[in-house]
Amino acid sequence: MDLKPKMIFAVNCGSSSLKCAAFLLEEGALQERYRFVVKDLATPEVEVRDPRTGNVIRIISRETDLVEALDEILDFLEEEGLLSAIACIGHRMVHGGVHTAPVHAGPDILEELEQYAGAAPLHNPPAMACIRYLSERLPDVDQVICFDTQFHHEMPALSSRIPISAKLTNGFIKKYGFHGLSCESVLRQLKETRPELADKKIIIAHLGNGCSLTSVVQGKSTDNTMGFTPFGGIVMSSRPGDLDPGVLFYLLKERKASVEEMEELLQRESGLKALHGKTGDLSELVKESERDAGADFAVEYFVKSVCAAIASLTAGMGGIDALIFTGGIGENNTEVRRRIAVRMGWMGFTLNEKQNARHNDSISETGAPVYIGIIRTDEEKIIAEQSFKKNTG
Ligand SMILES: Nc1ncnc2c1ncn2[C@@H]1O[C@H](COP(=O)(O)OP(=O)(O)O)[C@@H](O)[C@H]1O
Ligand SMILES: CC(=O)OP(=O)(O)O
Ligand SMILES: [Mg+2]
Image (tube, rainbow, N blue to C red):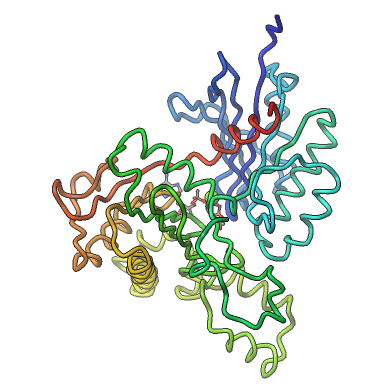
């Protein structure tokens, strides 16, 4: 009998953060042992957290490079005697293109995935860099790639088609939908805590650095606000969300902007950051909103954008039973949730202010026509489970 511990390591490259988790395989179930979080990729520290308490038990300082952060995390696991226990590594790849199930990260797949790098430039290239680095440091360990787009791949054509000429789309340009691993985590938890809602009409509002809303009917994605790429949908921290295509032509033709300049401006300098002028961090904007009219404007713009998406997705589903907040902002920002619920009052949203302030699981008034809840997403657990299944399947 093999008594050596076995571990699954999950890597989640977000647009502003790196989140990793180490799971020990105990009696056939995955038990999280350590969580590693780089909250802001511009700040040089990795928090090592104890998942049982959520407490930060150590801070590892690092250089500013993502791969170096990962290197330090592996050094930590080595010190703990756990590096050799890694049986499999799972990665979140935001754009999966044609893939509708997890894949092993062999050289052919990596080469093929290169074609989607430009469709998720804030996400896919760093995830690819992590895979390449890990295949050098741990060449014998199986790496599995899990896709954010998988959950949405059966979205109805009424949602997924993009109405441009077939000469341009070639079947490839369509709405893919993102934050799918987060949706899976939220639905799994909802099934456990509110089984009566699991098969109803639900909107999952994933509000983090990247933000998207997904409509779910009977556990299946029917629409997502992001589109062909994670640029689309509602306004985000530094991304504009849906944009009149005429703006792009104008910038290219009249302002002679280069594609690179446009990409940089639209990826990193737009969205809430452009509205406010200094910061796109919604938490900071909320903090400043009482004394800074520009910050308050940016928060209201965001809230209106979320509410417009809720109304549109509700129309698509022909009703709504529950709204679930998740993601860094959705889980933690009382004021953003309050403003959204108040603005949606006309549609039957009634917030319980006390429960909202306490970040309770349920934050709507008892008996209100629309249930409003908060669920802490655990994308890393879904990555670990999907990877373990692929690794052993
Ligand atoms: N504990 C917290 N309290 C308040 N705001 C938070 C907290 N954690 C995250 N946030 C907010 O969430 C945002 C990041 O969301 P997250 O979903 O973690 O990021 P990413 O989109 O990179 O995955 C941050 O910009 C921050 O404003
Ligand atoms: C798809 C996306 O924008 O992801 P994240 O919120 O993790 O950056
Ligand atoms: Mg994220």
